[in-house]
Image 1: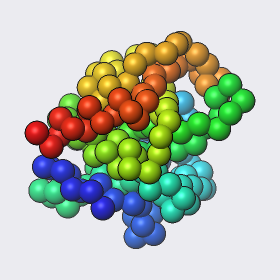
Image 2: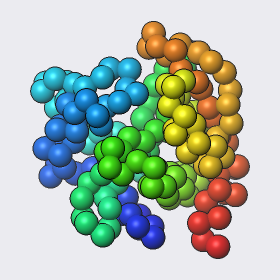
Image 3: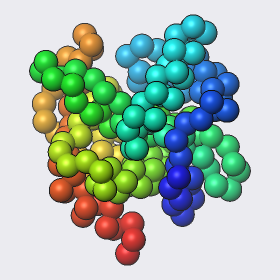
Length: 176
């Protein structure tokens, strides 16, 4: 479990299933998702996937909880996707609309990049919808650099990357 000034970031647990299943079915939460809101069965599978990934990767997708309310406001962390024929780590985040624009994605991202640095050396990739300017600003603040416009799973996205050697500088800002 990670604690920041305003957040608790922790592995997803079975007790989180109902919350995330509901979020994955919510059109506003799934804004900018290529899949859009998920049906009940797909939302359950996505919850299963988060539990498995979190058990496999210490900085896999984690629940993001607002400390002041105790409410789960989304998730952040890595998943795996195929890029250029190779499985790669994809760094991502998704927050409920009321939590957006408050710096929470950046705060959770910095905490998770710090954790990732302790167990992984290499590049993390992130892809965003070209219309998602707010997400682009988060990636900039976290130190990700633009790589290229590409299609992933058939959808046009902007691809960004960061070397975890560079992440030390970003996470170091949090401590100071």
